[in-house]
Image 1: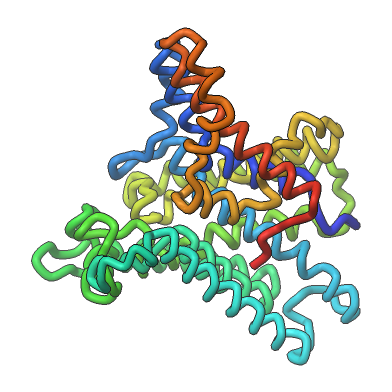
Image 2: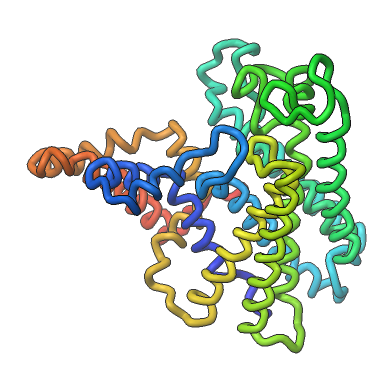
Length: 377
């Protein structure tokens, strides 16, 4: 594949971020206003599960990490061509060294920004500062997936992927936790929670457990690696047509989903633990999402509908940080649209208010996109 950037990948990133930045509130408001069963089901899907199980909302974070992994082979494509080698693991060290430094820099920045989103500048004291974060996990998982990608061929990468998931499963099942024993996969009794309580600085998200903790970041590397595998397969020159690649990706996706469901018997699908079954199940769903977007946008060329998602995806980190509290979009939306909304039926005002926030965000992102203003890390 000659293109170094896929429109579908940017659109999928934007689709993923849409639900976090404000899209979920539109569905919640519509469900509350109309009580239509489909909308009520969608609203339920836009909440995290309490512990074991899976909802659509549980897939948003790993989908973003999967996309980050997918971006890696495309971003390395030019350097591989310039060095006249077949794969990134064959790049000479003189080229790899600045790549490592750039990766370290990006990871450190993402960890810092994650702590900022957690409220660093409120500074309620070290004990009340949460260090673990969504952005921090993205940075760390992406970094280690990148190290593996730059130093091993595809066969060894797959071995590393299997080793990570099986190894995580075994230690979570068979390493005992003081006061609980081995294999107690609860918020209080899991090995992941125990390690966070004794090693993770600052406060934990849920007092005894942190969903972005230390040990569960290891299987998150596997989520990023699934993105790497998908992009590597997609861009590799082969006898397969573009449509056959979509078919093969779909088959691989269902195999992973099946493996996740089978593994769920022993190691429950659990986002907060980022269980190995969760990596497989959600990884399969991520591949299905990408295959659909790739088919419709890149192959069938139905692209205009996806432009708002492209605008969002081009500044995904920026809008994530802004919508997490740095910018009060509700205040801005009310300033521009509040008067008009106040003249609509009271029952529908929450829906129009939620839509006005999304519209405000998309207008801002559209302006940034047209002016080529991007937050690059």
